[in-house]
Amino acid sequence: MGQLRGAIVPVTPFQQNCAILWDDESKAGMVVDPGGDVDRILAAIEQTGAVIEKIVLTHGHLDHAGGAAGLRDALTAKYGAAVPVEGPDQRDEFLLNGIAEQAAAYGFVASNVTPDRWMAEGEMLALGPHRFEVLHCPGHTPGSLVFVNKEARFALVGDVLFQGSVGRTDFPYGDTAALIDAIKTKLLPLGDDMSFLCGHGPGSSIGAEKANNPFLQ
Image (cartoon, rainbow, N blue to C red; front, side, top):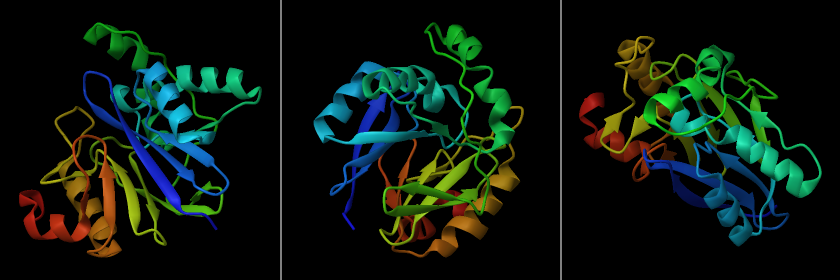
């Protein structure tokens, strides 16, 4: 089994961490949260040598999913085969259906997207030989998902948890209690040595956040 490799491409005016993950042996890859700047993501994929098998969404916000439809179209044309979009949980469908409208309000263009597969807690996300467990962590959005690779001790947490902070819950559908509960009952038990990539800013580890994050004290 090859090693799991990763590259981060900051996209959109929101500087969202779009991630490209791939197996260094088979080159099987996936793109997580392509919020926009599709040309930049395509150039980064080219540099990694990865062959993208799927596009994965942690949640339905514009800055994470706004480029998913465009990237799917571009990769499908490039490979001559459909590249599916997987995730988030179906509870974020209303957000994915409102991307174009939301983008217009911010003065840029993005497309709504319908995933080929909704994901739910307890399911598995596969990338070549690598397996990510799917956890439902609502609060920032109703359908936010976290993907955990226990072998690599690495998780993709979207906008659930950040270095020194947690996801915003000031949207009409936000739920602070649900967010903190999900972090405390699902993420903290993953272990102090579990490192994670978040949707914005630098990554961290569960241990560092348990010790230092003011929202978890």
